[in-house]
Image 1 (tube, protein in one colour):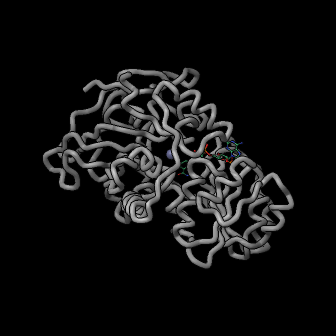
Image 2: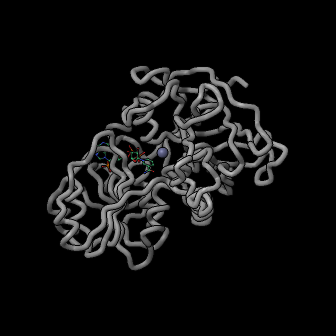
Length: 349
Ligand code: NAP
Ligand code: ZN
C-alpha cells in the first residue's frame, strides 16, 4: 500500500514529502493510522547521517501514536479502534535472553523503527513521519491517557522511556538526590518522572531562560551549569545524574557532583565523542559512569501506565509536517519547550 511520508532522500537534502510503501499486515501485525509523531534529537542525528550509516530514503520518527485500523488473524493484544503507541523498536529476535527478559532494546537483533533491516521495501525500516505503520503486535503499546492528550503522549514513546528506564534502574525515589542534565525533550521528561518517583530533583541547564520553567516541571532546584559557583555548591551530593545532552561536553564537571558510589548515566548520543573524563574523578569516590538505551517493551508499557496514573505528558509544541526543517534548527539551539510533535494530518495538506 502506498502512503505519504516526510523523509530525506539523502544526507544533504531536506526532509520533504515523499511516497513510501507499507506491507500488507501479516497474521501477527497491526496496521496503525498515525495521528501524531514526536520529533526526537535522534531523528536529526540520523536523517543527517551524523552517526554515519544512515540508509536513504530516511523517514525518521519513533514517537508514534495512532489508532489501530486493522489487525492480523492471530493478533490478540489489540483490536481495531484501540489507541496505541510505537516507540523505537519494531522487531527483535524474540528468542534471546534479553528478549525473554523483556529487554528487547538490548537484543542484538533489535530492529529500530527507522533505519533498521527489513524485508519490506526499500530494505530498511521507515519511521513515523508517515500516515500509517505496520508492526508486529508485540511492539505496539496500549495508551490509556485521555484521548485529548494524545499528541502530548507521543514523546513518552522515546523521551519518556529513555529517562524512565535509567531512573528506575538506578533507584530514583524518596531520599535520593537526582540530577537531570540538559532540559530538552528527554531532560524535561526526566525531571517530571524523577519528581513523580519521589526523588529530590535538580535540573541542570545551559539556558538561563529555562530556570523558572524547570521548577514548574517539578525540579526542586535549578542550576545553570555555565555558572561555576552554582555548580560548586552541588559538589559530592548526588546519588544519580541522568545526562541527556546532545553535544560533547566536560563530563568531569558533573562527575564531581556525585557522592561516593554515585553514578552518572549518559543517554545523550552526540555525533562526536565527549572529552575523556579524568579517571581520578571516578576512582577517588568509586563513582560510576554508565549508559542506557531506551527501554524494553514491558517497561515502556509500565512507563505509559505510570504516566497515565500520575497525569504526566510531555510539554509540546505542535508543528505541521512542512515545518520539520525549521524545527530541527530550533532544536539545535536548545530552543524547544520541550518537544515538537508533528500533526500527521498535515502530511496530506
Ligand atoms: P533535545 O530536545 O535537543 O535536548 C538536548 C538538550 O541538551 C538541549 O535542550 C540543551 O538543554 C542541552 N544542550 C546543552 N548543550 C547543547 C548543545 N551544544 N547542543 C545541543 N544540546 C545541548 O534532544 P533530545 O531529543 O532530548 O535528545 C538528547 C540526546 O539523547 C540526543 O543526542 C539523542 O540522540 C539522544 N537520545 C538517546 C536515546 C537513548 O536511548 N540513549 C534515546 C533518545 C535520544 P539546556 O538548554 O537545558 O542546556
Ligand atoms: Zn528518540
